[in-house]
Image (tube, rainbow, N blue to C red; front, side, top):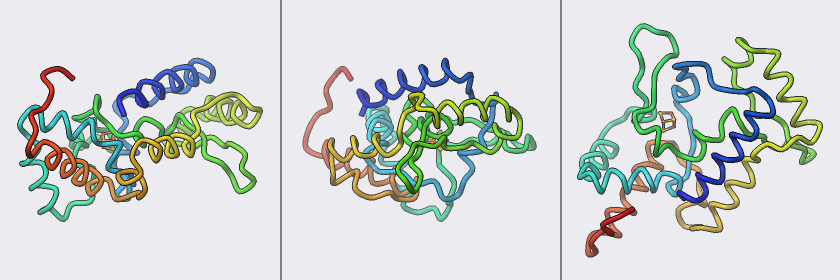
Length: 188
Ligand code: SF4
């Protein structure tokens, strides 16, 4: 997963350079969606980090017992509209890295920019240019391709899109089960 993230990071950087697209400062709009879907696999790095820092069990219990729907990593800035931040930014999932900087395929299989509402409202020209760039064949990370790549890594942990909290909980369950009888490596 770390390798996939690093590959995606380079593609997103190239896309940003070609189009001028970037997130609005402090914007947490997409993290506030109550129905974000993700696979457990993309949250394995987060789960491993929580395991290494002795927080995995507590996080697992919390996610299993709460009825909350928001992403557990999102920390809203009280009284500042949509604003907020991700307290696990370094270990965020694939969907978090793709959204706003990737393309989806339309009914005829052609790539189309996956739109971000606040950006469209605040920087309509930049978004229109980025959309035109994608339509004209400019390279953008393709969501479908990245999710296919996850399937190739581990179909069991990547075959189903789940609500983000459940995806994180299952990633924690996988890491806790794996290390139940093993010691983690000292590095990594
Ligand atoms: S993991 Fe971080 S970036 Fe992804 S939805 Fe949650 S708060 Fe947002």
